[in-house]
Length: 239
Image (cartoon, one colour):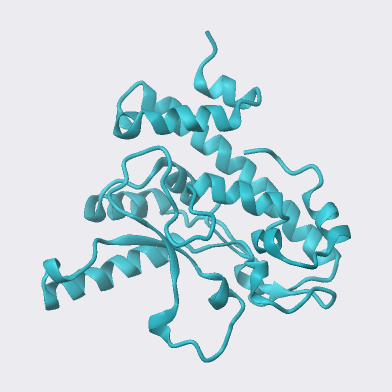
């Protein structure tokens, strides 16, 4: 019988992730944990290849990144130690996000194209670095110490700013900025990305992003750059 990893590599991408989610917290028990991490790392290796392809294609069609040094930032050498520190403090990360931090690092596609409508609904792909999660935990812990843990919402990993913030919409007070996030502990294979418009898991969010060339907001746009989208999405790796 084929393993989950073998089935994933053979093309059963969504089926395998669905099965892994059905195990809930049991996915962290051996020998399933090792195989689940193989699937998660293969998924994020494919995601990394897609992001690299998209970056190069976006440059070729004249897309202007707002933060050129942050488009793709690889994991730091001590990423494993930092993941362990966060999990000791806040509880387990979903395997999908853990593998993302290990394999990809962070991505920031915020920017503009001269031929695209300047509107916030493009919602470019952003996944913040692990350093943001650690800093957010530090601030959350200090607030718990000051105001009492019972007054604070549970800690959640900040994954990305909302589409309005990505579009640098001015006049929005900081308290109104919504962050796509995943509460911890989350000992499952994947987890729902809260506040993200599709209300789906982190892996499915990435699938949606790649389906739209890194800009899932185009799904609801009245006018789309179809020629560019066809070029951006051609031959991307399935997750």
